[in-house]
Length: 286
Image 1: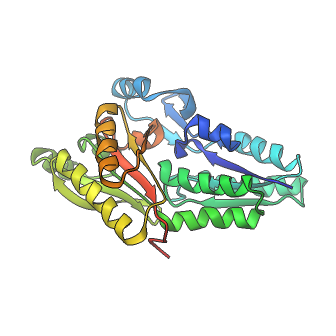
Image 2: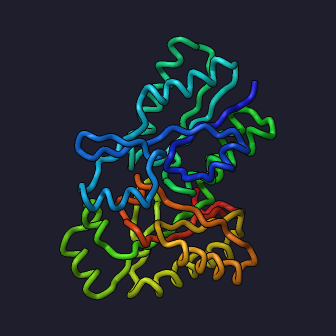
């Protein structure tokens, strides 16, 4: 009996990687009024003009039907499944996954299903999925695959900065006064995800200084804990992202892949956001 991996669209794993490791995925959704769109069916170049015209959409977890189909399809082959989803603090995907697991077990009582809260999103989630998929491909048990994901969660970090505070303000992530003051004085928060929530790591004057501070934090972590893998994330700022990748390559002789952040996570930070996701050799947290 093999182990199959299921994640959600906010992992933003490259399609080639998902195909290589047979990683299944379900899509979160975006709703503009009465119009609902699966995240995987819209790109950033289309999404942000639509958001400007129609206002901020509501994001929602994958449908019960889609989750049920994916889990049921796996267990009916006799395989077990390890589901790794974005933070339960950010979405109902994890809790809906638990509901669907119970539904599947009603008909397939011997099915082996694990549901993991990654406590993050984007490629911090993606790395947990990838390490689990590698363990599964190596023929490890469901318990070992689960532990590979949990081990990676203890080792990973996602740091990112918005181009400005307007989208954080629109999305209700900061108060209006904070947004105005921040933009007036060009104060840029460096954000990270800890304990399942987005937190301010530090505040820096100007985006260029924030990018340097973000790299410094990465280097501190690598010096203390070693480096596993690293990617550069961005929203509609490919040139800046590639410049950041070059800076990282000069410092650690690793050429990071550059990956988009999609609309569900991106609606809160907006175009121009840039970040780094990585994991270390030793755990950064217990």
